[in-house]
Length: 231
Image 1 (spheres, one colour):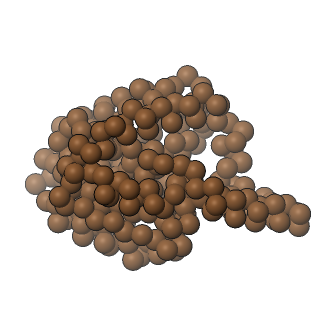
Image 2 (cartoon, rainbow, N blue to C red):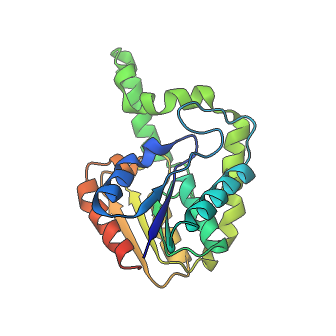
């Protein structure tokens, strides 16, 4: 039986956001992985001419292409990709969902304020270019038009009324120090979806880029075990 995994990155992101997890799946399985780049995303952001509908259609096309090659499809979605993954599960046959830092709610202002404070202190000492937050958001602040942010929030609004209709097996992974998505978001989704088989994994020190948390050696195997249990 051929298994395919569709992996969806987040808003303003690209394959790098989930690279460590996709590499782990490649090492541990013989599954066929497909990691598309949504319109306007990737190494060179060019979001001005794209809408929520473009990103949803990109994901649909990617799913259809993968499904032609395999017998069943898992979908891994990071941040906005998690919302798109749920959208696909409502429309297509999906064996299981893995939602990493799903952006059903945003922004976690408290952790973001802590990280910004650290950025401010680093700036005072002339070390801002080495600051993780600076490196993560510098290009995004410069390159992301307000229109695109509006489209991202609209995408979430398009899918949110249907969370309760999702009955696909689903595994949530959420960092408790996520600077963009409140860690309670995963709990909210866990309690809302209709799925009978579901699991909720927290990373105590994990931030939004959860695939780069210090405890991936602990939760990567748990997610893989969940996925294998859905065959």
